[in-house]
Length: 490
Image (cartoon, rainbow, N blue to C red):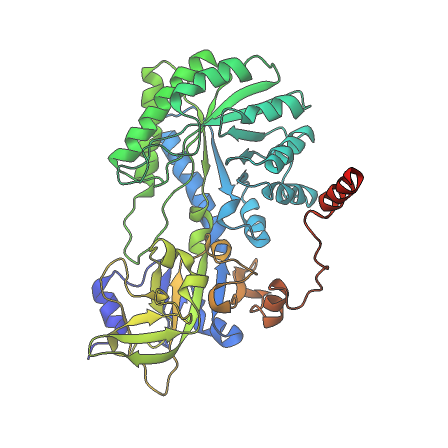
């Protein structure tokens, strides 16, 4: 009977740059021996391989540098990291070592920005691109940053009234402003136009009536973002072309406009087989932008990107142990994991996201078709397909050897969507989280960032370990007032 490694080698070109197998038939992830990590920390276990973050940042910079050189493009490129992908300090600290800038989406991002400034990780010249539909506290926090002298803090207007707050409350002498354009959604989407941003027909009036009259405010950027991300599809090129023609139109009435933000969405690898040509895609983006600008006799813009998943996604993995196997009928064999897909990989449940799934050990064992089941009592807590096949195969388990598996490229969004540090479905605890890095000599280092969530932390969140204040009548003062009025009448 064929071994699992034979199946992989006949299906993919294996080993890859990222994955390999050692002499003991155990998986290597970026040359990190995962069984050694499991022996030290156990499972379930979330890991972050920090060098991958810098690798992707530098890769993106090279892609744009190459494309701009190829087409003699005269604009600059700026790499921003969107914090919503992962707010953890170790992520920001690692990314900022590579001379990047930041994008925010929440009021609570701004204290994070201020903390990074106090620690010397960023300066007041760092670009802070402030996106999203802004509640009052977010508006206030952005204004405070600008008034403190963060000269490149750039609010991206998401609705027609947002500018009013800055006009009334900003005291700085100079303010850079951006406008997010409301793009059309994909043909298969539920809506025609994105709920985010300002529609094309309203952009001119917003600039001419509210931004231009105040000499402190300069419209410097137009922001482009589509939900599907950067993809070589007719839809993507159509929307980018429409956006660039609008940029050229605005440039004629707004000379200080000199930048575009083409959003995020650079894809990451979700299968061992992956053929996305990053350089060709970036080349075509640069070529199209330049062609449209030259056609309209407009200087090319500086280009900003906001890469979130691309920055951190491939740095993450989560490792599980198979704790049981259940033959539920003649055809369906279940391997049960010591964790939950719903709570720990919520995108796999919520949007059908596929991740690279590979066994950690026993690559020399024969294999069988399986389904993977999670710990919760929810029937949807399962994983049963890979993007390359309708069937999922794993080494056959015997009584002598434990079996471990890993899901890879899980570094973006999963902790926040799963409610990190909070309450999750069936009270499944957040797993241990280990940071893996390399020292100046290239040696692997590990650090326990967080232990497994405890029952005490859950009981405290749920109110079983807190002292509650006595309940108060909601309308006590109004009731007393009405009583006194009634007494006077009598």
